[in-house]
Amino acid sequence: MTRGGARAGFTLIETLVALVVLAVVMVVTVRGFVTARLGLDRAQSTLAAEAVARSLVETELDRLAAAPGVRTGETDGLAWTVSTEPIVLPLQAAPPPKAGAAAGGEGAGGDDPQAARKQAEEAARWKPMRVVVSVANGRGRPLTIETLHLTKVE
View 1 (cartoon, rainbow, N blue to C red):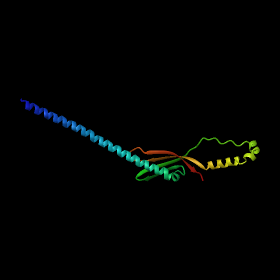
View 2 (view 1 turned 180 degrees about the vertical axis):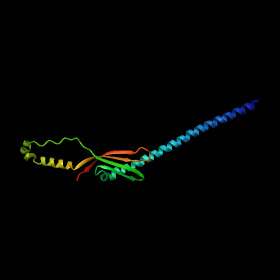
View 3 (view 1 turned 180 degrees about the horizontal axis):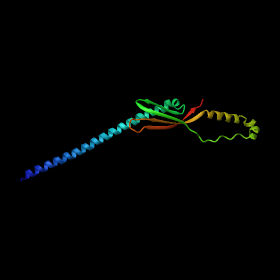
View 4 (view 1 turned 90 degrees about the horizontal axis):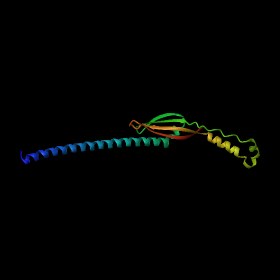
């Protein structure tokens, strides 16, 4: 075997190794592009769901959270659910004013009991509601936002 023949075989092996390395690099590159595209799609669907949830909270919350219950709908092709329930606050009732203080202090602060009663009546007209907005983003897990809304009791 001559030197030229041995070198020709070695060049063939180098070419095959280079093709294998190129194939591996191309597979990794294509896999990276596919993963990036899936991540972009996931981010876009999450942003669309967030936009729908934000618009519901900012514009429709007064109407949707007026009474306890579950409401559903669809906006921009995304299904949403708004569930509302009252929050029971474990607050103690304010103690009644002392009889001696009310009679003796009428000249200095006679409006205080009436103002306190008026303030209590005003506060009783508002009821805190727990509102959970859930938007299905088409990717399995829904986007959920939980907030507190004060509803005026008529």
